[in-house]
Every structure is written in C-alpha cells, then in structure tokens.
Image 1 (cartoon, rainbow, N blue to C red):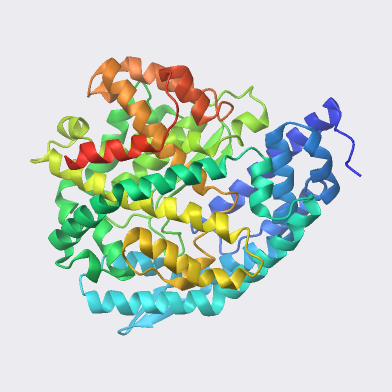
Image 2 (cartoon, rainbow, N blue to C red):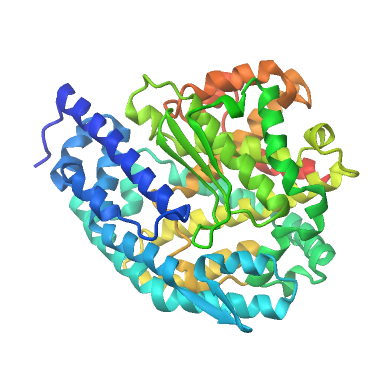
Length: 491
C-alpha cells in the first residue's frame, strides 16, 4: 500500500533535517578528501540522521516535492552502502605501490602519470593503478552495486534507471541526443584527436592508450603560458570585473595546498549554502590547475551567492546541470581568446582555443558514451557482465582502448553524468547569448556580472532548461556543444 502523503509540517521537518544532513556530509567529505582527515566517517553522519534514511520515509516523501523525495530515496540507498563508502575511502588513502623504486600513493598515481614524460613508466604506473583498483576496490564497488540493485526494488521500481525516470530525468531523450552527437563528431575526433596526440606526444590516436591520455591533457608544453603564480590573481581580477571581490567574501575559503592524501580531483564543498563554501584543488601544474581552479570557482560563486532564504531543495539539491553550467562557464574562460588577451597576453590565443575545443570534444564524447553505458548498466541483471560492455562502448567513442576494470568506479551516482552533459549545452548556449548581447569580452562587463549574480541567487531551483529559456528563449540542445567545438577548432 502506498504511504500517506506527508503533511506540510512533515515536509518542513524533513527539509530542515535534510539541510543539516547534507552540511554534515559535505564537511566530512571536505575534511577527508582535502587530506585533512585520514578516515571518512560517513557512517557516523548517517547514524545521526537515521530517520531520514528509512524505507518508510522514502515511500512517504513520494507525495512531497520531487527533489525531497529523490533525496529520501538516495538517503535510503546511501545508508545501505555507507560502510562501503568508508571502506573505499580508507583503501584509497592507504593503498600505495612502488614503480621503478618510487613509492606512489594510490590517489597520486594519475598525477604521477600526467607529469611523467617516459611513456613506458606511465604504462607501468597505470598497470599498477588498475591492479590495485581491481584487487582492492572493485570487490567493494561490486558488493555496493548489488545491494543497490536489490534495494531499488523495495522502492517499487524494477531498477535504478526506472527510478530516475520516475524522478523526471529525461534519460532516453538525452541518450538520443548523445548518440547523434557521437555520430556527428566521430570523424572530427578521429582527425583532431590524432592531430593533438601527434603534436603533443608524437603518436597517433590509434596508438594512444589510457596512460597517454592523462599526459595529453596535462599539456606540459603550455606550462609557461599558464604560470602558477598568476593563477589566483587572474581569477581575482576576472571576478572583480564581474563585480565580485573574492578576498572580501567571508563565506568563501580557498584550499590550494598540496597534500599527499588529498584527492587529485578538484571539488567544491558547499558546507553551508551560502554561508561556508570550500574550494579545493590539488595543484599538479599548468593549464590543468587553471581550469580546475576556475571550474570550482564557478561552483563556489554560485553557492556563495545563493539566497539564504530559499528552501533546502533549491539551495542544495535541484538540477546539478545548473551549478555545473556555472563551473563550465568559468572554466572555459581559460582557453577563451578574448579572455587570454586580457589576462595572460599569450602569443597565439587561437592555438589555446583549439586545444580547449579538442579537449572538450574528448570529454563530451566520453560522457556521452558514459550515459549510454550507465543506462545499460542500471538495467542489467548481472552486473559483472557489464565489464566488457564498458570497454566496448567507451573504447568505440574515444577510439582508445579503455580499462575494463573501471566498469564500476567510472560511475558517478544519481545519474550525475546527465548534469555534466547538459551543463556543456547550457554553457555553450549561454556563452553565445552573452557574446551576442555584450561582445566577446562579456566577462569584463559589469552587466554580465549583474546578470550572473541574479541567476546565481536562484540556487538550483530552476532547471538549466528553464534558466536558459528564460534568459535566451532557446531550448537546451546537445548539438550546441558540437557547434561550440567546431568554432574553437576552426572547422
């Protein structure tokens, strides 16, 4: 029997407790992944909010606001695998390997590869990383996935895919757009990917392997153009042009220090929205650091400007393509010719725009393939059968053999892949609007800053589709990303 719909009072109580639950989780994630705390004690956090993660709560919240219902379902599932989250984090912190006499922590293996010029050593580092992944992490990932698979049926859905369609995720429509994008850009990637690999690493796309990809995008040949000592001043100056004084934002905290146990994946931890927002990156050098800093600054300014009086679902939940869109808008400035001329005065900005466009082409194709894979994964009866499908789908999209061992760890929960994909379309179309209204140097105009702050203040209440339509009148379309890429490549 379906549970009775929650009363207004029950919804308000759930909303307030959910706000504290997310704040405590984000603080725990920040402390651990920033390398400030060895353990990830999510189990203790879940215990403090046990009433939010009961099956009965998830069933009851179905009658409430969709975002709170989704949060209740995710809390129910997350509670069942909270021990797995802690075990994975502990293993990632403790695991290390020795390659050529050099001991490298697991979380630093990709960083070590990206900074390694010797291709044979990169291969040894990658093989060591994959071996640790498959032996120590995959058993935990698999057990958690099987628990989720069984638990979803208790939410009256046949699988995770059906559950998210019930939440309103337009998975099939987006998948169709991604298939069209993959078809439309296949020859473009084969040509331009091969060109970039040859110019930077001296090998063709058909010869490239996983251990070459991280080196390709590390782009050490561009280090002189992206000096580390000018990175933060460039961000501060860019935000100043938009009317934001970074140094006076008491609610924004930058964590840029290198630590051995700090995750190499940059992130923003909005512990309090908008009261306490942490921006975290693990510096590895060059353009990658610049893009990471600007990307996370987009998240940070969005959360830091979100209105405090909005309900929890609008401040903390909602459409993740919105906050990812603001992150992409900032990140892509780093390879924008007009911005480069203003902030870095590089000799050939068009070359950097080309590099940024080919990089975007790679990642959009990769995430398009990830969506197609995840839709299959979450409908599969036998999870381990998806190991080969991961290899087939991703390798076909990238034209580079991927590691089949990553079939479990290359999945972000909650179909977050859709947030990344739609954020690229949101950024491409909003950028085009800003350029048409304010010029190619829109990022230096106070009017642009006024508009951004107004939109940031809405949190994640409106979807990316609704925001784009309201501002530009346009429909959000993945095809716009291909057009943006072709402009940067000059095709």
